Image (cartoon, rainbow, N blue to C red; front, side, top):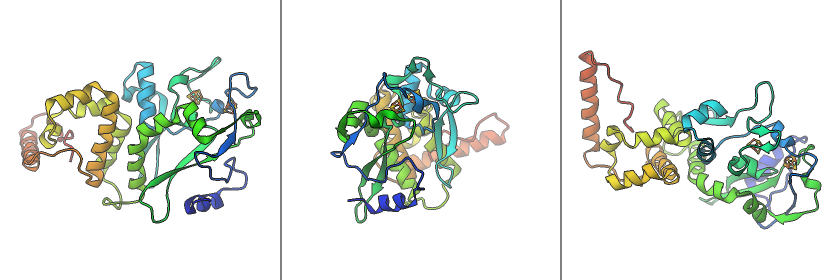
Amino acid sequence: MASDDFIKIRDEIPFTTPVQPVELGLDDEIRFHCHKGIACFNACCRNIDIQITPYDILRLKRRLGIDSSDFVARYTTPFAMDHHNMPGLKMNTKPGTSECVFLTEGGCSVYEDRPAACRYYALGSMGVRKKDSPEVEDIFFLVKEEHCLGHDEPRTLTVREYRMEQGCDEYDEKNRAWRDVVLKKRSGGPTVGAPTERSLQLFDMCSYDIDSFREFIQTEGFDDVFDLDASTIQELIDDEERLLQFAFRFLKQVLFGERTIPVKSDAKEKRLSRRRGLRARSKAGGNVGSGSDSPS
Ligand code: SF4
Ligand code: SF4
């Protein structure tokens, strides 16, 4: 049975859409097979519109041996995810084309680390909160585009099997807490209204710039507020995947007040004294910043 949200969305889909208006569950079967020998091989990579997730960046920047800010600058284009300008990123295309930057003659040059959107295609997914349920539930649907011949191939498998084959589960798991933040930010919560510039900057760093976040947790401003011992900080510095999950916890704490990271009892006092010190030095003509490493 289709959820209320899906019915609403389905009814708004123009009749020319490639999205098939049938909600699929994990155990529903689809007919689809994408493989190297197929005539349309890579046709889908020649006309892309791919939103990049935090875990996509982590995998791709590691593969390319560059840092996260470098990856974002070279391979993505910013866009606003909602009317409050929540920052999103899309994968770049080659100049003058709509072809993915990572497409080569031989196919995808980053295949093992391709983004979640590439893994999912030709399956679509979205998180919906059903009536009277606090939980966000994943629903799936097929996207049938004319150029994609995978739908005519003689293979059926369940959505669950397809997701497993493509490695979608791992990506969803690693991005889940981030998706919660995005959904919550969109639907209001304690910070209803326009988010501050500062909260958008924090969202941007925690979502898309893990290398800057790693530096951030080593600043005096962070240490003034959060009560983490040296070995915990070191573990986060050494383990990027843990650091990413910590970044999402940090976001939930500063944006929604979901306190999971211990805060020092004298945090407020320290913060104020740091600000007073910075102001005093600024007045005295010292070349200092505005205390932008402070998490509040
Ligand atoms: S990352 Fe790879 S699979 Fe995804 S669109 Fe680019 S070339 Fe295609
Ligand atoms: S079958 Fe579909 S997904 Fe696979 S290469 Fe062809 S167009 Fe892309």
